[in-house]
Amino acid sequence: MDKVVLLTGGSKGIGFATARKFAEKGCRVYEISRHEAANPGVSHLTGDVTDKSSVEAAVQTVVGREGRIDILVCNAGTVLSGAIEFTELENIRMLMDLNFYGMVNAVCAVLPYMRKAGAGRIVCLSSMAAPFPIPFQAYYSASKAAVVAFASALGNEVKKFGVSVCYVMPGDTKTEPVRHKFHAGDDVYGGMIGRSVAVMERDEANGMPPEKVGDVISNIALKSRVRPAYSIGLMSKLELFLKRVVTESFAHKIVGMMYVK
Image (cartoon, rainbow, N blue to C red; front, side, top):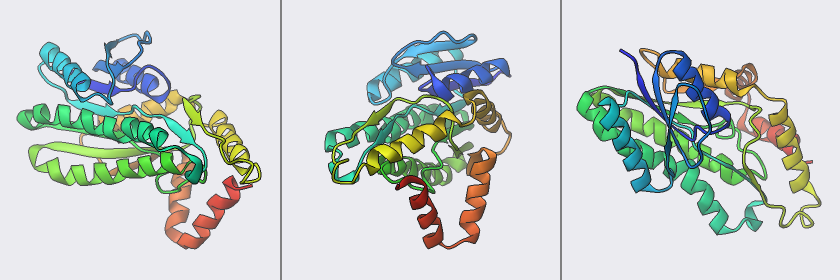
């Protein structure tokens, strides 16, 4: 039986590539985003994950057409960079609304149907910024750490209903993300904000192709059984291994040397 997949934030980047890979593997794929981008084999649903009613309407549309949702991929997100003390609260809320509460809206809209079916798979997109919080990208790092905690707790809550949950942490990916850059206070920090953001953007420009990441995510989602956590990319796996064998202080120092210049 073809899997019915609903993916959030599928109009560009990792989401677009992941939706395409699901379609290539014979799934019936729906993506919800504010803007449509033609993607063969993928049905677009216009919606905003930060709007609970919008997400619920999209979920009802898919269930009405297909009778079920087998896989939910919570991918929608954005990036915010800037100094902690100079970032306005309204911008922090914007980030959390999309990266965290958007995921919550999607999960809560889909879960009743998965519980009723006694089966389902939920994949939440986190980041390597969760285990390695990035200076001048603290709020993004915190939002992705929240995804990890949420997915881990959710997995234990819903396993009795036949629903499995995992989170995925891609490394640097060449996606040209929508980055909300705030340079307020850069004079106070001696230009460190701008230099740090330049390092982040350079790493992303030299990162993995989104098609590779999308292929891995779709393969994970289609497994018969999943582990709670996955990293994507050789460097990511190496970084996580080293984090287990070195002290927290040493890992903290290395991240600082990479991004605080």
